[in-house]
Image (cartoon, rainbow, N blue to C red; front, side, top):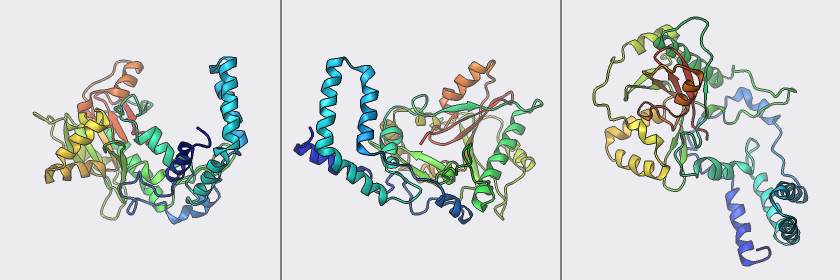
Length: 337
């Protein structure tokens, strides 16, 4: 209620929620940074503006009106007017102060968005959070391992270009600069389940792919000793050396499709073993996951359905994962945060 003790508490919670500490990064001190070549580009990116309080409240009323009766909307208008005269200006001031304390490439929405929209919900991430998209087929039929090697090579080349500052800085259609702050975390980042709210872990220099084949996991290097991306032919040779079949694989990837608190509990139990902890870290810090799926979806609808929520024993929903099917079709499913 505006003006009440609860309203004062709301002010304090709002200030804490927009605090500059990036709590969602489990390893904020070692997370990858943008190459210095992009510093000028980042400085030119406009910050997300904070609308004046009156404008925000008017937009709220416009959004509420179609959902309410005339009587309900009148009550809402009265509450909004009271809020404008009591707690509203204080909240607006705290929001502006918290936003001013943040780095240029952040905003007041970032912390709230991670907690409320991405990392806080406890539902399983397949379907509820993770998007997917299917990739256009190549111009000629390509065997699955060859397709996978080519796509892994492209991912490594993109990551290398970003690290070395040779990737073209993105702009909007009209030429306005687009923020690149989160690009270093597109690859090499994992969502780590925690009780109540998850966190992100970004590897400083990921150099391998975590490959899942019939429930077994393998690490495939993507860069040479100098840090240069390996060519597709070399990656294809590595993929061909993977065992053709796996017997009694534990299918631990299915746990990433579980409800988040249950997965957090299971992961903590798994991590009590040093060998398991090392294996989990190898997946977390991989550039990306490659799932070699034995199925061959017969239609675009089946391909989309399988890519969105397929065989969980051959997936790792806590990372960006490249899916390559038995007939060479491919898709990407990625953790949304």
